[in-house]
View 1 (tube, rainbow, N blue to C red):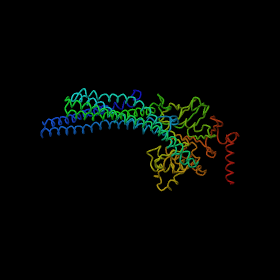
View 2 (cartoon, rainbow, N blue to C red):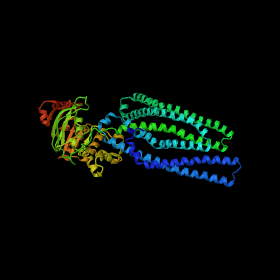
View 3 (cartoon, rainbow, N blue to C red):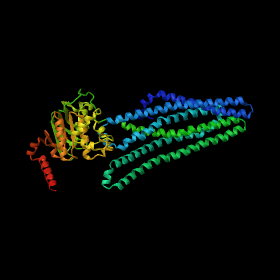
View 4 (spheres, one colour):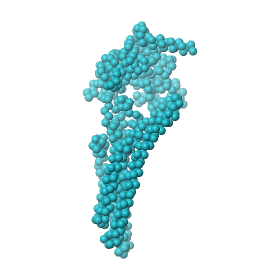
Amino acid sequence: MEKKRTKVLSPLLARYSIAYLFGLAMLAVVDYVNLFISQFTGEVIDELTGHTLDGGGLLTYALKIVSCGIVVALGRFIYRHCIFGSSRKIERTLRDRMFAKMETLSQRYYNENKTGDLMSYFTNDMDALIQAIGPSIVSSFDSIVLTIMVLYKMSTYVSTTLTLYTLIPMSVIAVFGYFYGEKIEKRYSKKQKAFAKLSDQVQESISGERVIKAFVQEKEQIDAFQKVNAANKKANLDVVKLNAVFGPTLNILVGATYVIAIIFGGYFTMIGEITLGRFVAFNSYIGSLVWPMLALGDSITSISQGIAGLNRIHQVFDQVPDIKDDKEPDKVETLSGEINIDNMSFKYGDTLPDALHDISVEIKKGETLAILGRTGAGKTTLVNLLCRVYDITKGSITFDGHDIKKIPLKVLRENIAYVPQDNFLFSNTLAKNISFGKLDATMDEIIEACKNADIHDNIVDFPEQYDTMVGERGVTLSGGQKQRSSIARAILKDSPVLILDDALSAVDTDTEETILENLKRIREGKTTIMIAHRVSTVQNADHIMVLDEGKVAEYGTYDELLARNGIFKKMVEKQQLEAQLQMTE
């Protein structure tokens, strides 16, 4: 493997190098001892044909062969424990590190990479790599060492000339294997990419099953799956076809070795150059060479696939997080909720227009800021910048006078409770989901948070109550129940800053009023930022900011904005008219 391919793997191999070396040493002992079994067999045949073997001698040979078998058995157990055990420890460590690395990567990385592709790193790619550094190392070492030992034994114990004849097909195997290894690596890499696309298609189809059925798109989804499945089939068949050529060719070359041994070995026996026993031993040694030659083919395949898998895994480790702690962060452990945004602009890419432009706003500790605006105005982008999911392009954001980039990420996010638009719930109990931000929360604290989010009564109606499993992404709950569960999770965290991103859109007005009253009571003295579409949600906010096309269109109190006869007033009038129309229906 090239050096650049092993910068992640090399330290782990070095850590277990002693175990690997000891295992390989035991493998060499096993190979060496194995050679004597064929030799003892040949000696027995020669003594039998020469009528020089008695019962005692036969028993001695039997004990020698049994002793060799015991040594081989113990040696195999030890080298497998050392090498295979070490490879599994490396697998565990590498998976842990890769998952930890993914946890540090920025949102941009997950926007650009699909779930199926990321999952394949942990499954197929990792399996291929572990196969390469475990069984394939054994096979490769065994092939080389055993071949050298057998050839030496064949040459010294039987005939050098006969041994040289058998090297002809073996040299062809070496050359053929080299070119095969290069091709299988490329094809295996394509196979992994095809599998990643297949996994992603399945994951999206299952996750979006309700949408698919609602729009009657089952046939289109089946067609789309058949396309990626066909591509996956072709990529797998390309690998299989190459193996289908390599395997039989290897068997032909092995057979050629046997033919050479029988023809020339038989001739040498007939002219008396070697004994019958040594001829039998020679053929037994040829049999011992079959395994290394076949194993060499499997090793080339596995190592090539392992290199392809390692290259893909390195794509994760080579990633540099967009968002990370400053080299010299400010020494801050807690935030009070004083936020200042000064002439801040942001765009998602260098070639893209500003998503937010020249935003300035000051939020004092304990105040509530409401953010309104049309879809795409930049509301969610703004709160994502406050959580430092992305970094601003220019201007500044400060918390308690500290530049947001100077605040350690852990400190910043621990002091913010965020309810996103996508109310993600894990496949766990309601209690576990609600206490996600405060793992040591008591049951009383969980219940109190749920009461303030106005979901406690719903939960106690469930048969399992707080032990109810919510299913993947909270699929067993209604939209309003998922929103209120997410709000309860944020309330329980009790952070200095609470951000609600359109978190009340799926609840009715009565429930909304109850939750807002509870938030006003429990959030006294703490900063709250809420994005809303309903004007009723923001009536009691200290300040309201209206965004339009990424800019601050209006800013002030509820009464001030109504008096300006601008965007906000039109939103109020429109929603009042909609409410009146609903009442008359």
